[in-house]
Every structure is written in structure tokens, then in C-alpha cells.
Amino acid sequence: MSEGLLIIISGPSGAGKGTVCKELISMKLPELELSVSATTRKPRMGEIEGISYFFKTKEEFVQMISQNDFIEYAQVYDNYYGTPRSYVQNKLDSGKDVILEIDIQGAMQVKKNNPEGIFVFIMPPSFEELKHRIITRGTETKEDILKRLHEAYREVCSSRNYDYIITNDDVRIAAEKVRSIIIAEKCKLQRTKIDYDSYKEE
Ligand code: 5GP
Image 1 (cartoon, rainbow, N blue to C red):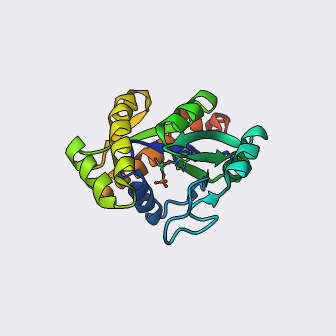
Image 2: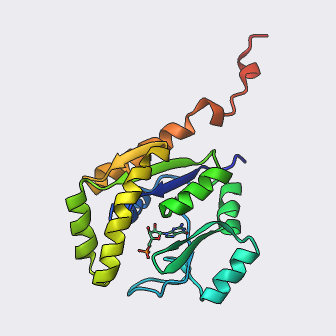
């Protein structure tokens, strides 16, 4: 069985990468799954252990770091987030395509160790729109919002390290674009295993 694709979807806070990923998953591409990260952040209302995140204490998270249990991890604002290595590798080994929806620091770590990954940057439509989305999400304090806006500017500048850039003017269209990228990547010559000899005339 061939290994699945590793797709890294990243972008500034408030660019809507989470919503684009949800929309993409709802399109039910065969074999496509969203990875579940570990975090030290407290669960928000409606979030479910093992589905939204694996919720960890700081001690548990630090121990996982020391055991090399993460493909990447990063401190995002005041919490740690990380991609569990065995969780993702098992899925790839069984032929699943796995999406990592992670921040930019994490994406750059993955790029170093997994250059075969497909790196997609979700760009907010405009800074004004980004500001509006971060503020109206209403889940953070004023101080958090300011931190996220400052970070967002820096992050937009790092989009040049990615393979694909998608502006999220419309979630449905943005998800369609990611879907098209995945389909096209699967058709890439380097990823296909054609037995040319079987086409030879005897
Ligand atoms: P939230 O707390 O809103 O769920 O996520 C905050 C940020 O952490 C988002 O930018 C999200 O993409 C990022 N994030 C979620 N999981 C991971 C992960 O496993 N690794 C990294 N590096 N970032 C993550």
C-alpha cells in the first residue's frame, strides 16, 4: 500500500484555516483525514477530547517532547500545541492522506523533516477583514487579540515559504482550491507507480 499525502495547512490566526479545513473534510475526499493535535490549552465549549484535540497538562506535554513524540510542536500565544508522531505516521502508513492544520512555526519544522509534504498557506482577504474576524470570534481577551494581530502581520510575510497560497475570500471556494491541489498532487508523476513494462508490446 502506498503512503498517503501529508498536507500542511497553515496561515495567520483569523485567516480561517480551521473553517477551510472543516469545509474540506465535509467534501468527503476519499482517504482524507484531519490530524488531531495535542495542546495544553483548556478545552473551549463544545470541544471534545480526542476529536478537537488531545488535551494535556504542561507536564504531560513536556514529557511527550522529551520522548520525541511530536513531528513538530510550538508555543502559540501562551499554550503548547504539537502534532503526535505515531498518530500521523500510522494514518500515512495505512494510505490515508493527513491534513495538519497548524501554525507557521510548526509548519516550518515539518518542512525541514518532511520536505515531501504539501504546504498550503491560507491568506486572509485583507488586514481589515482579518482584524474583524479575530475580534468577532469573541473567544479571546483584548490583550490576546492585540497579540494575534501583531503576529498575523509577521506571519503573512512568511507565506513565501509555501508551495501554494490561497486567499480565503470565500470558504467554499478556498476549500475547493485545496481539494483541487490534493487531487492534482495525487496525479504527479513522482507519486504514481506506473508499470511501464506492462504497456510494452511482446
Ligand atoms: P486554537 O487555540 O484556536 O485552537 O489554535 C491556535 C493556533 O494553534 C492555530 O493557529 C492552530 O492552527 C495552531 N495549532 C493547532 N494545532 C497545532 C499543532 O499541532 N501544532 C502547531 N504548531 N500549531 C497548532
